[in-house]
Length: 148
Figure: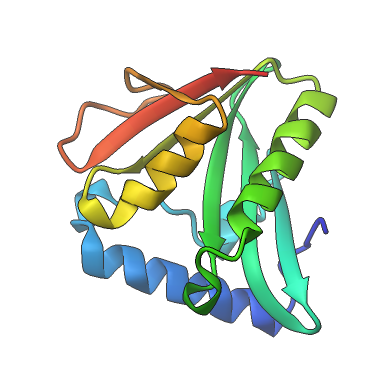
């Protein structure tokens, strides 16, 4: 569901995400958006709920009329490998296409921790690419893109 990011559950879920990214990635290489960044008008954010519990999230940030960036993809650690990320990514790809975007790109980590994420993106047709939208080459980041 599209989420306005006003609930305490999503705030806590995203705080855990930021904390985890800070523990894995040097601060200068952390690109996860905080609540304020995710509330900007160019961002559409989705949460996946199981009852009242947030078990996944993801967002699309408009870069221009045809190009968007996938942001804040996360599954609850206790729900890893339950198919949440695949279903959410499938939904986001369809939504981004419906919004008129023809390209979706992303930045993710290069560390082994991010290998499952990179494999997921590869499975959904993302290819590795050069940095985009102001990103720079960074040994802690990889960049991926796909046509919609």
